Amino acid sequence: MTQEAGTNAARRLKRRAKGSSRYANYRPRLLRRLFTFLLRVAFRLTMRLEIIDLHHLPATGACIVMINHIAFLDPVLVSGAFPRPVISMAKAEAYDSKLLGPFLRAFDAFPVNRGDVDRGALRTAFDVLDNGLALLIAPEGTRSRTASLGEAHQGLAYMAALSSAPVVPVAISGSERWKHNIKRLRRTPIRVRLGRPFVLSTREMRLTSETLRGMTDEAMSTMASLLPPEQRGIYASLDQAKTYFLHFV
Image (cartoon, rainbow, N blue to C red; front, top):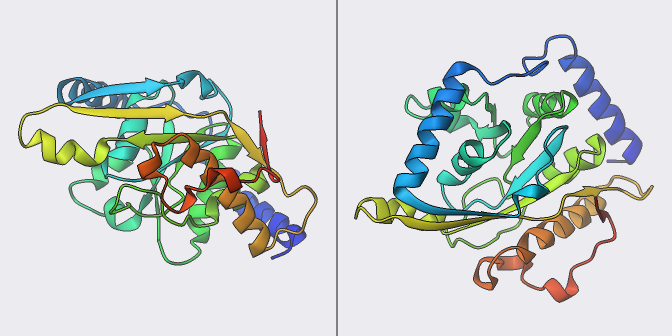
C-alpha cells in the first residue's frame, strides 16, 4: 500500500462515518458513569492499583491509548481507572457475549473481527479520533499467554500515521494474577505505567507494509521500555530499538 493509497482509503472511511457519528459531542451516559464508580470500588477491594505518570495522558483531544494485553482485565482497568472516557475496540466474540456484551456497550466500545481487515471497525476508530476522543488499542490483538509481549499487528501504526493522533503507551504488570488471587480473597498488586506520548510519521516515505512494520516495532519497543525485563518478550532488545518514525510530543 502506498502512502497516497492509504491516505485516500482513510478519507473514504471518514466520509462514510461523517454525519452519523455516535461519538459526536460525546458525553458518558449515566450507565457508564455508574459502572465506572462500581469498577473503582471493585479495584480498591480486590487490588493494590498503582498508576504511574498519569500526567502523560492528554486531558482532551484525540489520542490512541496502546496497551499490552496479559489479562481480560486490562481494558477494564483503563476504562475504569483513567480520568477521561476511553473508547475501546473489543473482539466481536466478547461484544456478542451475553455476559460481557452489555458491559462493553455501556462503555461505548465497538466490535472488531480479528484475523481480517475489518473496514467497519477502522471506520469507527477514525470516527472516535475525529471527534477528539481517546481510542484504546491492544496492538497484539489477543492476550499473551506468557504475560510477555508478542508480535503486534500493524493496525495501530496505520491509524496513528493517517490520523496524526498522539499515541500514549500504557504498560500493565500484575493483572494476570488477579483471577488466581481473587479466588483466595487476596488483593493483587497491579502496576499501570504511562509513557510519553509520541506521534508516528512516515517522514514522507511510502506507506508500505515494510514502513508500517518499522513504525509498529518502534511503538512496541517504547512499550517494552516501560515493562519489567521479563515482560518485554520479542521486543526485549532495547539497545537495538530505533526511533526513525517516532517523535515524542
